[in-house]
Image (tube, rainbow, N blue to C red; front, top):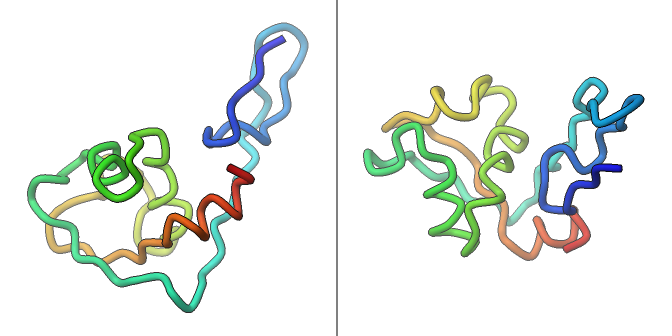
Amino acid sequence: MVTYSTSSPWAKTPIRSGPYLDTLKIRPIPAESDDFLYTVEPQYTHRPDLLSYDLYDTPKLWWIFAQRNMDVIRDPIFDLVPGVQIFIPKIASVKRELGL
């Protein structure tokens, strides 16, 4: 049976018969008062993994930005472009929410 780590966007998605994932179960990242507004810089164009690495010391949390900013980011890769403003949750909030 396949299992996903708690840092994965698929960790809560059920497994169908065999090795198949069911429909993605969204893992919402709630807004917190200490989230900070960030304007995407050119070096992070289409690279949420790099932004995740620079902010959280791991590229595995790339999906957090899309989940926290569902009103701004519909595609987690191609909507991350210079000038877009997104809210970034603090690492302590992310760890608490994901159980890391």
